[in-house]
Amino acid sequence: MSIKIALIIAIAGIFTIPAFTSSAFGHGLGGDQAEPLSFGDMEVTVRTELTPSDITVGELDDINMKIRFFDTLTDTTLEKVTYRVELWQKGELLARNLFYDLDGELNIKIEPKENCNEVDLWRCTIYGGSEHVTAPGALFVQGEGRPTMEGPIFVKGGLYNIRVDIEGATSPKTVLATLLSYDTFVSVAQEQDFLIQTAQADEIPVVVKTYYDEVDNFEFDTSDNSIYFDMPFDWSPDYVELVQVVHEEVRVPKDFAPYAEGKQFKGYVNGVEIDQRALLNDPYTYEDTNIVHFLITNAELTKISNAMTANDDMDIMKLKLVPQSEVSKTSTEFYLVDTENFEQVPTNVNISWDGRYGAGDEIPFEITFFDETRNLIKDVHYAYYLFDENNQEIARNTGDDPNTPGILSTEGIDVPKIAIDSQGTYRLDILLYGTGLDYDPTYAGVGSAFIEIGPSLPKDTITPPKPDVTPTTAIPDWIKNNAGWWANGDIDDTSFVQGIQYLIKEGIMKIPPTTQGAGSGGNEIPDWIKNNAAWWADGQIDDTSFVQGIQYLIKEGIMKIES
Picture: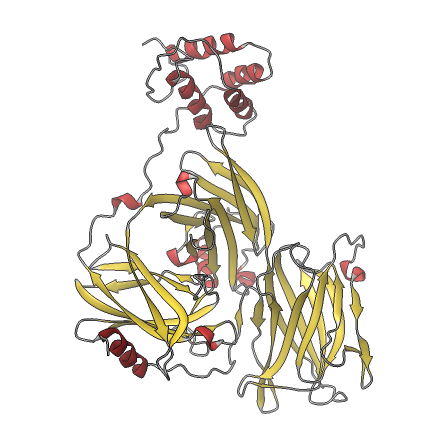
């Protein structure tokens, strides 16, 4: 027997994966479970799930919404249930109706339909099904069919509130004296397309996939290559307490150097730097595109809210993504086995870290979960345990809530920071409990890797290098007028170049040191520089971007500057 197999069996013998009952509530992109309420000797709750779980506006015309009513103590589904179901978004009612289900697992077919012209959107929703004979007004479909909702549902991205009242249970004639009311939330994604305009007039396509609300004010800053956008958000403490996670994706081509594969990133929300675990870089899903996820948890939202003052915008979330320098990482990968038969499961775990972190540091380990086809495994619940050379446990994290074991890794990537005091060889064990709200055991298992920790090294290069062009001193406004006239054709190229030459020579306009090109000074100016001048005159780009165009003219010898 190989050492690796023997080690895996030994580890599997230590850990067991329990069968879970659904005793806790939690929020997922396409599913949510409400807090339980007392009903007789039971603690009952409602779980809502969308299939598929990751929905993007406009891509589907058939979405299944499953609502399950069950006892969290025994995971038993209650039968013969009358549901009142309401769908809301941004305070607008989209649908409301009664439904009846024999086995307690109600499935409704959602058919999104745009172009509702009613002031009250719910008036556009059409329902399909038959009224149940013993539950008046409640829609019911016999056999494998599903009742339907067709209307302005899931036609916009963002957070949806699925409100469920249990009006009867265990018998179609049993009406509860007090309604059991639950609020659950699901997110539907919307993709918005933007273009980055570089100083060289290159256009880089960027996609923001928003799961919360429509984004606005997209900007690209050439001084640090950062991306900024904002969206509506209520920062009042009462609302922040309700929001489990805000999820935004930024997709940028890998061939755009500042966002190339291997780059690190920092993220800011309303000026507050967010934790590394809230900013995840996914270079795996697409060959040509990097995806950077903002996964801002309730803890991060609370931290940001507490840092805000009365002078801050309390109804806007401002997000900023700043690329950092590229780092070389050490990595190791292993597969998991089940804890009963020690057979390999379809899960591979990759652990990587920046080798500059070492003894005495909190080391950010990037833990990534792949299936057998190298796709990321989503909604993973896992735990980690760290042991030293003497098999002494020095760190563990099994999650924050005893009712929901494990750390939740929504996108299949997590970056926990683990403090390690000394150099040496360590064993990092990974226990995967399951995936999704149901803790699906398909990928569950345990595995281990040995990691070598060296000394802590300088990390100055984590700070992004200064851009090639630093911001200049402010350029007088009247120069912008000249640039605008030139862009509009009111003055010719020669006059424009001569004017800029004079301003630079006299020190009125300052630019960074630039190597003079050997051209003839023929004043043949590319169209993109004239476009830059027009945008600069209109305030659409900053001084730095305009100056980069002037530097280009000098480097190419189109503009001669006497020393």
